[in-house]
Image (cartoon, rainbow, N blue to C red; front, side, top):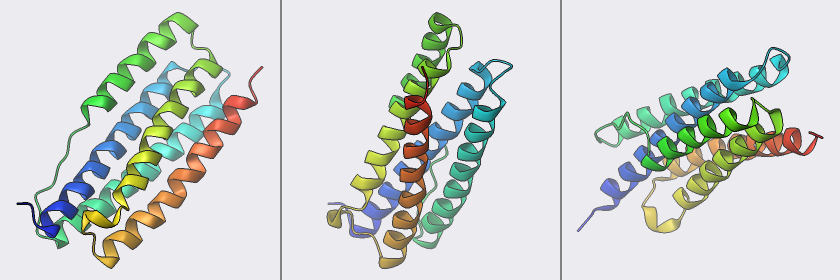
Length: 153
């Protein structure tokens, strides 16, 4: 049977993986943008940087809990990044299509953070506070991407 410490380490590692997905997804989306999309590239770079910071903080929390650190990506994230590539090929690097896919990615990370805060995950108060703080920024990121997408004609 899994202990609460093992469960909390698993949750933290899952968040590390999905933040790695987010970094890769925004980096790939930024590459798919055209010359006139410097505004979106700046937004995507900021969110990738935010997730790098999240990974550092979550990694420290795993270490403090005595756990082994995960450094990869989720299978779903790899599939999502591949979908961004396909979508960009068909859309001709269309801003709205790229933003649609970015919002799907943001929906996934929002859900991961919401699920992580479930009481059954055995998080310490410090871990829960860290995740809740990161969740606020993730939610704002999602809302920004959605607003940018909705502003496209």
